[in-house]
Length: 314
Image (cartoon, rainbow, N blue to C red; front, side, top):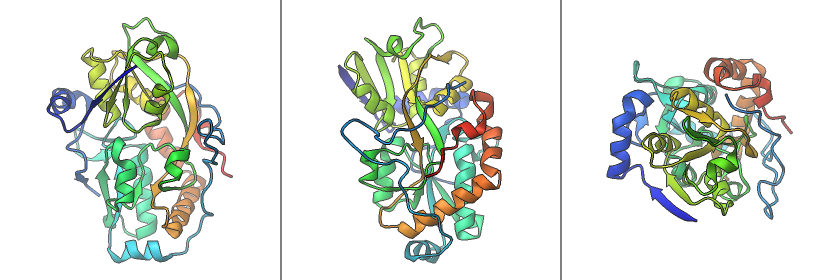
C-alpha cells in the first residue's frame, strides 16, 4: 500500500485550493488569526482501538470555579481557541460576510464568552487538522474546538472535555463512481484523508487500499477528488455530509466505521480549565443552545434527530 503526503503549504495544494476557493468557501492561510445525509453513528466503544484500552468518556467533573489555569487565561485577557475554517457547516468562512461560522464556531464562542465573560476577549485561530495536538502542547491555543475525535493515543498527549458529538468514519466518492459500500470505494483505490486523523488511521488498517493520500485538511481531499487525483475520501460522518452538501458532484457510500465521540482539547495539566469547559458544555446542552446550533447548521444534512448525536454523559 502506497502513501502520499500533500502539504497545504505546498505550491500544488495552494494552487488547488485557490482555483476552488470561491466555490468551496475556503479561507486564508492556516494558522491565521480570525475575527472574534450521514448514516446514524453507533455508540462509541470504550476501547478506541484493539490493544489500547481507555475510556473516551473520561474527563474531570464539571465545575464553575476558577482555578490556576483559568486565572492565567483571564490574566492575559484573551482565550485563544483553535478552530477550522475549511469545513462547511462546522467551521468555514462565509464568502459573503468574511466571517467564520458553523456548529463548532457557535460552541467555541459560547465557551469563550462563558469563561471570559466578554466575547471580545475570545480569539479564534485557524488550526490545520494535522497540527491540532501540537498547537495545544506548544501553548499556541488554549482550546481546540474542531471536530476532534477523542482517541486513546490523544488522551496520552492532551486532555479532553466530556464528549459533545457522536461520530463515525464515512466515505465520499464522485457520483460517477460505481462504489456502493466502503470496501468497494477503498479497496484497490487511491483514498484521501487528513493527516493524523481517525480516517487516516482507519485506512492504514486496511491492507487492500492501494494508496493513501494524506493532506493537512479534509477539504483538500474534496479538491483532489474533483480533479480526479483520488478515487475517494474518508472523513468524519458530519464532515462527509458537509462535503456532499457543498458539492453536488459527490455522494456518500453506504456504511460507517470507527464509531467515536468528539471532544474539546486542551493541556493535560489544565484540569480546572477542563472542568470549566465541561460545565459550559453541560449548560450549553441543557439550555437548548446545542440543539439550536445543530438545527441551524447540521440538521438538513444528517439523517437523525439532534439528540441522536449528543453523547450519553457518564
